[in-house]
Image (cartoon, rainbow, N blue to C red):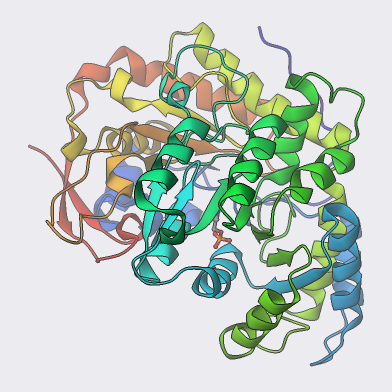
Length: 459
Ligand SMILES: Cc1ncc(COP(=O)(O)O)c(C=O)c1O
């Protein structure tokens, strides 16, 4: 039995869950056109669709909500948040926004020109979408070991530095508008990026005079992995590691709904480039609202200022990563193929290995996610070919190199017993994996299709 790291908190408020029958779940799925994003959450027992905005706030955060200053301009919460960001990240300029993609929508048009490239260890799907909306092309350059889901490597989220250099040389530095470092690397399985890799990427960015932007959604989890895996960092605090990592970049975008432990919120941080900050403020007003609230209520600013500090507490991070490792170990011991080692926020089940009879264009990751819902009311999602939009030029279905079913762990929400239910359901499915069928799409939008596409099971 793997070891479970006990919770560094006790429970004060509970939210009842509805139990459903398999027949009910079959009906709910049909009505949702086999898109798990279209399911009502009331019909879900354990919701692992996302770790974004789904965490439980602390009593301090709720107290902060009550103290929220709802002044249109210059609210207390804004100044508190700016102080927190300056303290934790060491950046001078801070712009709150309502969530991560709002940060991307504002920052990337300031950095990317039409026809340029953005290069990332891996772009998250909203980042990819915003790069495309700038008429620029996103290029992923994660280290090849990221695709080896079976063997241990401490930092599978790293940028492939030789590939990065070679690409810049081949297209010319003026064609690369931005280099993006996503920490942790969500699309590669929540895998961490080492400090050394951040440093080396920054060195390349400096050499070619290209801005380096950190996608900071899970910065604290990444810092925890650096502390526990990278030589030289064991004695450093999470805040020291964070300050060093961010000192190498020009700016960051952040969905605060992850490591900020809030239900809504985002940030843009800029180290010292005043001109860029002025541009960002100029874009914020029409898109997000006045600069001191940036699309958020005053109470949200307070909750985020507090959550940022709770998210970097070592005991919390030990429990948080411990939960993911516990579930991962239960699955591995039963022979369920998962991305190994587990990342910081989710288990990525290797659906390509579990369902080898389903080709990428019938979406093995989605098929497994649907089966898990049918089995036990657990909701996960595809991170594979279903998540990739059709090629805008050829209209063809791209093939993802990895076909995952992602099971996210909301922060401070589920217990050890819930995780045991998840493991048992997956182990049951594994025993009848060859009977599971693929899906086809019957309707899809042009961009970010996986949120709203409609599917049907193959006969
Ligand atoms: C790495 C990463 N970047 C950006 C985003 C977008 O953030 P949001 O959902 O707050 O718009 C996400 C959300 O999951 C993410 O994981």
